[in-house]
Image 1 (spheres, one colour):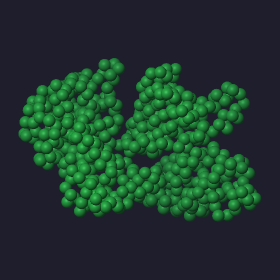
Image 2 (tube, one colour):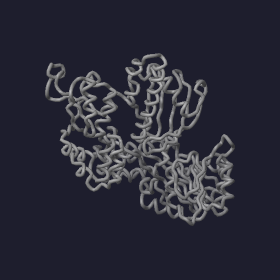
Image 3 (tube, one colour):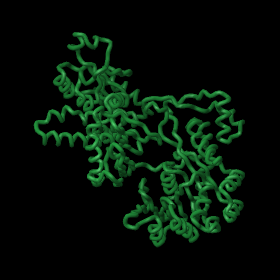
Image 4 (cartoon, helix red, strand yellow):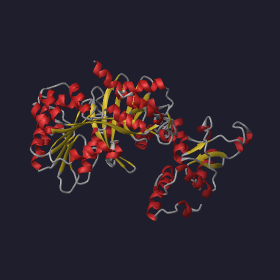
Length: 564
């Protein structure tokens, strides 16, 4: 193979790094560095290596009768159907085995194939993601790790136990690695009567993953392994437990928060994956429109006051706060954060994590921070009156304070502070801006297609979102999900924020002092130009970023809240 042509324009250090990667990741990295589509690079690789490119992969019905599962996974190769001999014919039994793989095979692989099944391989190249997904969908994540043939082949009972332990360790590692590759934020191990279900939360949605058929036999061992990794009491199965795991997955360094919960059929285990090397997002990547970014930047430039980010759990509040901190991080500003946990590391910023078990709460940490001569303070969450009181007084003494609240919209944050027994005049004097946000799924750019809605549907959408019917003229810009391998046939890949930004004014100050309702504050804010969450979502719909249905989830929620 002409390696020089394959690596055209790539530095020697990068080439060496690529060759050290797993076979499944090499071609995608080369394509990225050369600014090429992965498929085009695979076709080029096939031409250079002399192995035919196979676009359509149709696995044989019983692949493990052709090739052991361990080799399928280790070599990332798939026995496929071809147009040559019939599967059950004598010719097929003697002919070479058609195998599609994701990187040119070496002689070692061919020798192992021949030793395992007595037939020579006939190699093809395929798209790496397609090959890997085909194996996972057919056998499940970590199927080779829990291949009982290895366990059953052990010579003694002690060997069998040791082999099973090693298999469980490999399986758990593969589940976590797969979750990282799929951009999952959570992993759930859920025991039921006849199965142990594993689900990933990807882009805010739960997705069940294919698991080995014999997984239920290893349920107790898998749960115990997770508890051991988190240094939990494995004998305690009646009470919930919490812990954390430090885990390395390739280039990612994960801080995994683990929670166990007893159920009818065993302990349910949830893992929250926090990538310590995640890159904080920019303002544009968050989804803020240009005019919204300018408003926020002016507020962030203020030397004092409070900026609050609101929304339910999982709406991206911590991610947004980190982006704001990153924006204002300058050598002349001393920034200190108090978080639970520290999700993103920002160079040049003093970051600490609360430890309630030793009395280091948000309120206690905030008191200590005020003695550190900060210019900007970021508090992960205002949970109680004590924290709110300290934050407000900090803002009134010349500090810019950023924090979050669990409220559904921006005006609701003001009434929430009042409910915490904070004096209205202090709220009016300190709060500069409130940003409510939600996360909606972003359409996969590879397979998004023009939406096909009739006039009645469009009018219904606009009515529910409280938008003028004249906006229907832009409905042709809307798109809908398709489905491809890049997005796991979901039609969505990633998420983007929709925002509602409330800036303080004299009229709103008066509402606060009078203890007026959040609805009245909202009416005033909208009349002064505040863009609602629905309207922000509509802007993303017109840009083809998301769909009506995604934005409607929040529009309908707020409608039901107002009715109640």
